Picture 1 (spheres, rainbow, N blue to C red):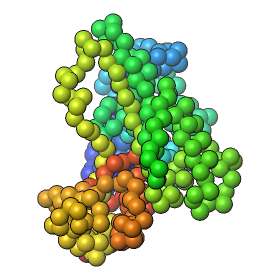
Picture 2: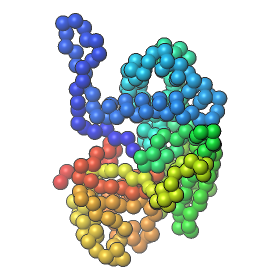
Picture 3: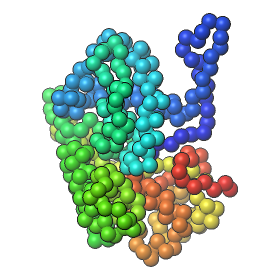
Picture 4: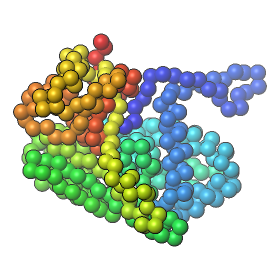
Amino acid sequence: MYASPAAVRTANVLSPPAGAISMTLYTLSHLETAACLWEAVLELRDRPVTNSDASSRALALHKCVDTLGTAALRLVVVGWVEAVEAAWRAVEGEYPLSFDWDFVPRWIADTVDWSDPRHPVIRGTAPAQNAKSTLVPPAGYGAAPPPAIGTSHKNHIAIEVHAAVIEHRHGMNIHVAVDAMALDAEIAAYCREYWSEIDDSRDPKALSDAKVISSYFEQHPSESCTKDLIRFEPVAYARPLIAGLIEQGRYCVLSTAHLTVHTASCLDKWASWPPSDRPIDIAASVYGWFVPTRAIDDDRRAQLPQDLLRLIAFGRARGFQFLLFDCDGSDVDGLPLHHW
């Protein structure tokens, strides 16, 4: 997920006034946002969804590149950093998906007007909530942003579907849909049906699908939901068979400072125990630990510190299958910090 590193770098402002030295401060967060914006623009140009709006946008982007040139357009896109970060701050607390692969492409699609190839602009009337009303699910850790259904490769059609797995005490539910909104509607229907299992007095029918999903899985003590984008390629152009047999997963890196000293000591101790004796399946890394976010039975939950349970719920609610606690990991806004 998106975090805001504390380190700061400086860069010259373009075209400073004569005789003046003008400097502005950019954090690593700004640089990462600029990279996310440019990456999303290239994906929207080169891998459009197969509908008329996306195709028209891709053509407008190609025309914009032809008119302005890549270097000039890149500077225009970098100028949107503050706007997209402001929109993200407005929805960050309830947005269930990632900043880079999900929010940024949706924000560009909903907010930027490409009609003038010499001057793409942010629509002044585009509300920030548009970005949370049309969600794009995560494509998996390290994967490219999703182009959705039916992209072509050398005249062969590759089909992509949106899938989700809900793990619960009776097993799991698997949901598959043709687009992100349809998938969210199915997941939200499940959450509304079992809303009584969480301690939330709100009427789920009065909440949006995104809010229902994030609230339900953040508050439920043992259930989780993982989303992914599955791509079916033509046999002639499929990746080598062995690649399809490799199990993959999504994880996020958190600073060990989000753990208390007591919890860190427990993880260190448990990592040395035989697997059958551990209260949770973990693995030690050089500078921390891998911790799964899957649902835990009540007996094992009772053995885990509350700060660890909250962090597991944080990762599970955002679609991560593992947490990597690392001493060099980023501090995440909103999560407690323990200085030790």
